[in-house]
Length: 449
Ligand SMILES: Cc1cc2nc3c(=O)[nH]c(=O)nc-3n(C[C@H](O)[C@H](O)[C@H](O)COP(=O)(O)OP(=O)(O)OC[C@H]3O[C@@H](n4cnc5c(N)ncnc54)[C@H](O)[C@@H]3O)c2cc1C
Image (cartoon, rainbow, N blue to C red; front, top):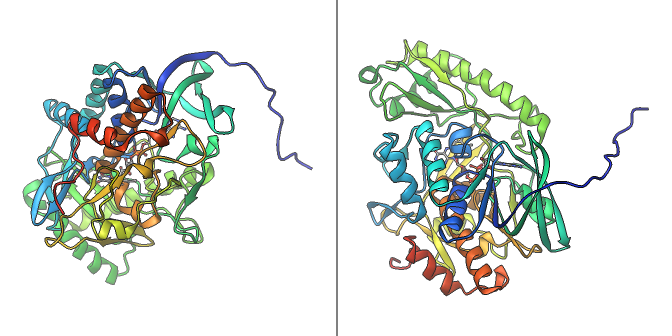
């Protein structure tokens, strides 16, 4: 019989460094967390498995910021501020930031060029004197006792090593660090269903004049083609121009298992199958666009991203979980650390379902409470980004870039206050946290009901 496991002998590891704050994962949450912690004077290390920052925003080819804006009583406003403004200014200086566009007639989003985002994020972190360790896969933790993390274990080309930290911020998107440390987490909608992943792709050589506002006409072309028997992975295609109007991004594929449920973004075999299937769907949809969409006949696929786009895996349980109702009712919380104006964007089987707060009757955003980034059981850990404490429906909204930047800056600021006051993360003064965030440019949404 084949053995099911093999014993790996224990060994001593070199210590790569000792830090006040260790951030795992360089997506929007991690960028904001590491840059903010370093800007506050904390010795900070960013650990990222790829050779660049941006998370899904670059590694999965997302190329657009959602959730920086809200529709506030009918007026489009940028409602996420603070460290993200420094990032946006840098992307803009590199010529890589589009003007915001209005999506669905209701809310603004803002496209960017991936190369500019990567460079701007490097510059932001290094400018604030954060250290970056690229090509380092977080692989486990060493605990001091049941509730305190002593070190993050990383696998690198130079070998396996330990990074000692006083406070750790899990911005891995998947809650990897929190799970290793034993923090409780949830997955999916309670019936095993998670938001479906998408393989993004970008086209070049589009004729912008002929394509026109193709994002409004392509869904109807797909409906007509379906009547003729053409099959698509999902409805709700998002096909939009980048800053250079001959370049377009396409968000339409959907990866499922043979039983129809979503590919699991923390299962290596399912991820492998999803990458291959994603690229297959890319080429299939591209053939449809070339054949049937005006302006796309001479286009070509200029890029499929380094990885499949994962929307949801673990959500680490805090003392509060942001819910779909909170998003739809524009909820207020006394411990607000910033806001989310993005609606519920649920990538369900074969479709994308949108649910909005009342527009323009409402202020269009909910508060994000400190409690959603404060996990249970592990005392020196914060969790920011798409793996923070939210229900499945709440996460369908507050997983996008804007609120992830908010959570990252809030986590770094909380870490700074806990270290400064030698207090537990759960015991810091919320007023002090809010004051520090506002001093550093963050918008907490307390002025509008
Ligand atoms: C297809 C798709 C389209 C989307 N479209 C949009 C959009 O248009 N606009 C928008 O704002 N949002 C969009 N989103 C959502 C958004 O991109 C993500 O939810 C957001 O990037 C989450 O940010 P994060 O920092 O929490 O995590 P992520 O962006 O997932 O970043 C996590 C980072 O951690 C790293 N990491 C993970 N595990 C480890 C480990 N063990 N060791 C080392 N590093 C690790 C990863 O490499 C990554 O860099 C989209 C998402 C997908 C999948």
